[in-house]
Amino acid sequence: MTLRRCGCGAVDVHAHFVPKTFPRYAGSAISARWPSMAPAQECHQHVMLDDKIYRTVSHQCWEPAVRLADMDGTGVERQVLSPMPELLAYWLDAADAREMCRFLNESVAGMVAANPARFSGLAAVPLQDVDAAIHELEYAVKTLHLAGVEIGTNINDVVIGDARYDPFFEAAEALGAAVFVHPLRPAGKNRLVGPPMLEQALAFPGETGLAAASLLTAGTLGRYPRLRIALSHGGGSLHALLPRLQQAWRAFPALRKTMPVSPAEAAQAFYVDNLVYDRHATAQLLRVFGRTQVMVGTDYPFAIMETDPCGRLDECELDEETLDLVARTNALRWLGIGAAASH
Image 1 (cartoon, rainbow, N blue to C red):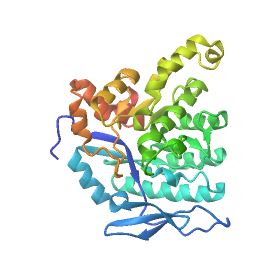
Image 2: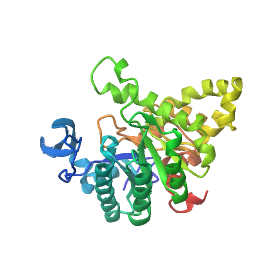
Image 3: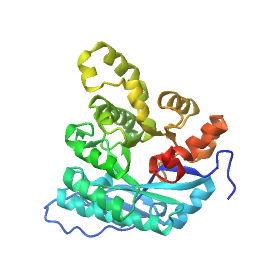
């Protein structure tokens, strides 16, 4: 494999998968938002929800050979596979969600088992039922040997910093599971003017920033200090919110009761991907979160993805040690893989 300067085996922590087919709905709900597939143009299928096209996806989503060829072409040695976020299915009945999550987890585990040197996998869990989510996470980590879990920024409009999710984070910490936070059904969509894809461009950052801030203001990171949480899309707006939150922490004693550690310091426990499309924005991530916390993320294989992850890192003109950390070592530590996990 011919790699670029940063091509020392880059690890892409933000890469999605969609299965080629879905099982037929076997639940009892009269109306369930259960996905199915319908034929589309060559090498593509429509993901159908409520008998409507949600998204048209290509065979890159489910064909490992196609995915591996793309990885080889962009200098990515390993991808961390997580479900397309809409498949997390928090809006299904808990029993139906358990079935969907189990199907997704066994699907991604099969891809990982067939190519363990190139793929790691993240589970989906039914967080609308916290006990069921913990049970599925245990199965995913202990039996399927997945590296961790993808969760949305909110579960049916309840932000992840809410205390009801503490038992789940406690379990994730105990299992050593990597946690990947992805925006889902973001706040503020009613303020957007333009086509639907602006949700990804403009609403995702604010949604991610607010979810991350909720983990800080709720003291979640302080209660579970060994929890490894990664924020997608560069942590969204969090880097811009932190100075304001820091000033509020100084000014309001009530905030310091739930946050004994300052927001700026506590935020450095987060990992973030570098899916910000700009070298100056990447430099800001390194300044705010630290060079041991930034990782490569592309959003493969969707339209908004970073198409040249190694080239983007080359633009940053990082020293060799920082380049290695961002390209691969930080991600391996977050995943709990090999020697990097002990540092």
